[in-house]
Image (cartoon, rainbow, N blue to C red; front, side, top):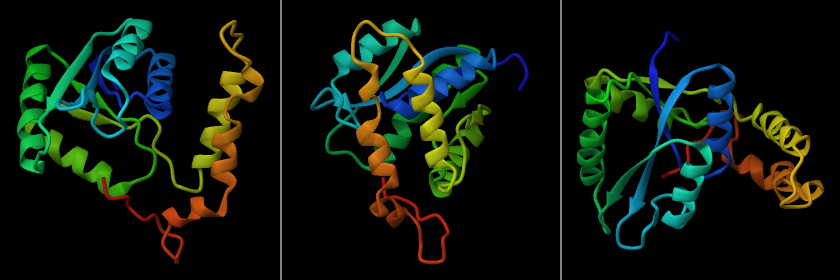
Amino acid sequence: MGRGRVLLSWSSGKDSAWALHVLRRQAIDVVGLLTTFNAAFDRVAMRAVRSELVAAQAVATGLPLWSVPLPWPRSNSDYERLMSGVLQRAVAARITHVAFGDLFLQDIRDYRVRELVPTGLEPLFPLWCSSHDTPALARAMLDTLRSTKSHHADISVAGSHFMTTLSNPCFRTFQNQDGSDSPLNV
């Protein structure tokens, strides 16, 4: 990638945080965090995290938060109309790329690429990997977290539930019987 300006789609979760980490390690100019909120409940649309926490995350990253309030209930056309407006704002701000922390859901990736085409914004997927590679990515995340000194928490317990979940046979339910990835309905 050249010297573009990147807006990072921010769900408030570990994948978004890791995507920011990866982009920064590659010296990519991330200029903001883009988050959709359920306007009726003032929470992240897909994760139900309170907006105050997301605002604190933005402050901690040193990046401005681009909030997109979504009505509740809403249709997909409502979502696409509101996102189109924020993407036009991004183009006007000379942003060249939108990055996503998606891992392996091809239909979600295809949708994101399709929605960006008319805007001229280029998509980035810094964490993209197969569902089979996801546990290794999770271990890399946790190894980095465990190597970080923190005075806020006992880091030895970081990720214990997360890794147990990934090793659980239920994790494999995200794959078809033939081993191909199965999309989640979001």
